[in-house]
Image 1 (cartoon, rainbow, N blue to C red):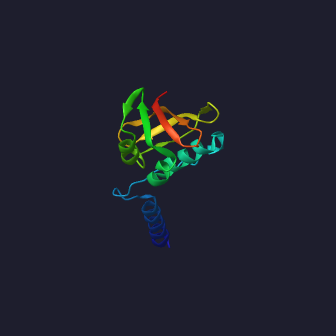
Image 2 (image 1 turned 90 degrees about the vertical axis):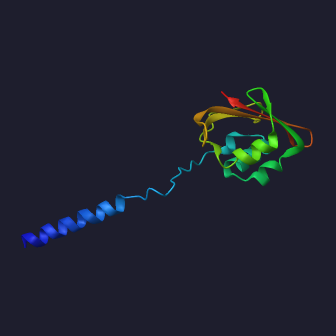
Image 3 (image 1 turned 180 degrees about the horizontal axis):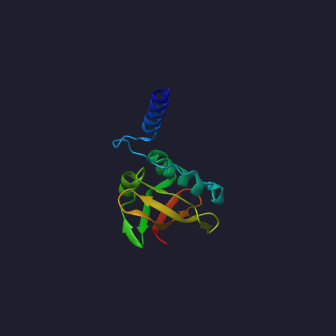
Length: 138
């Protein structure tokens, strides 16, 4: 009887250890759901949501064909940024929304640069298209 209890205990311990193990080859990513209702400008909100989803085609649809990008005040190639960074960079929180819902500040994650506080400021023309995006560390 003692051998059976020992064997059962050992079997239970092995099964629990097996359940807790994860493969080293699996990439685990924490998905953070956030309330985008803080972003009250519809164009900025929908563009932001496309960015978060990593949908570059949808993201680009909110911008004028000649949209400009300023990164910490320095001009960058908007199209190149949009296609290379999307899906690899994302907000992990929205901390503050200003300018009638067109400026979003929050925590940000970049697969290349790590985690930091940043902002996206959407400048929208009278047709509802974004003609300038300002980004940078906040």
